[in-house]
Image (cartoon, rainbow, N blue to C red; front, side, top):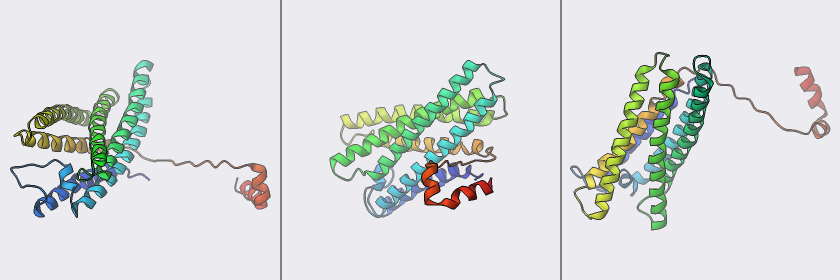
Length: 258
């Protein structure tokens, strides 16, 4: 199990490409308007057949994102431990806490993505509200995650020849924050003025926000390529006395193997 670095690449092609596929289907079938009007990402997954594809792409995307975030967490954990001699214990402790926070926040963001895919906007209000709640959770969590990882990368890898990825991640985090502000302003203005000219502003900012998050997660492949080996250890709890009664040969086999 060495090639976990392909997971972030699958995020780019499956999630990033999948949203484009849903948009093309929605436009060709007349379910959304053609340019210059630009729909929200959610509007490309309301009707069939793109509705099913939308759900599938986001569900797989959330799973791959969660796996990538976890493996990066384990990688960063090892890197931070190796820098203990170079940095102070206080700095290492701070980075470890940031790493744990990034894992938690990133996992919450993946849960938000799955909510967006499972609950569509073209359904009853209760489901629609869940969809928007999931989108809000995903946006906020993944934006926070990008800043935490940019911070960890800078302090743990700047002396290891990884300055390129540090700069890329910092740039993506800054752009993500800017687009989120633009999206929030555009969305608020759209709510105040029905049929407002700000619809496109909010929609385009939302698309940019999503693809910046996808690109940020894709950058994790550079670090995951450095993982040489992953060990999976399983411990089974079993009462020794009952185990011997049920299978008398178990203890003998175990002793022989040892």
